[in-house]
Amino acid sequence: MPYSLSINFNQLKSLIIQCGIEEKVEIIHMLERDTFPLRFKRFLNKIKSDELSLEEITAEVEAVREKRYSGK
Image 1 (cartoon, helix red, strand yellow):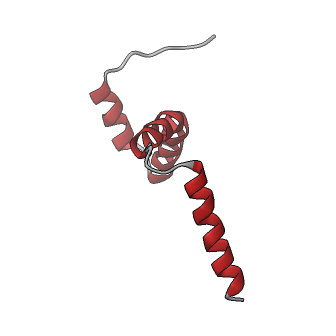
Image 2: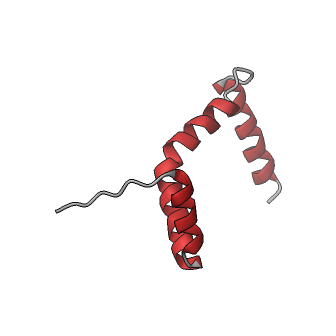
């Protein structure tokens, strides 16, 4: 039978403070996994730019590759 407990945010923070370091690290990893899609979407929106076209990016990549290979 599943159980449920209602606590407010300050109570949650108080409980986390009482945890050991390994438990806190586990909580951090859990939160990172749970929030990754949102954080990644925000990151993509932040760096979104129409300044470069795919052709310009491809040309730059090819120039760097050519420079690398000619240096060997």
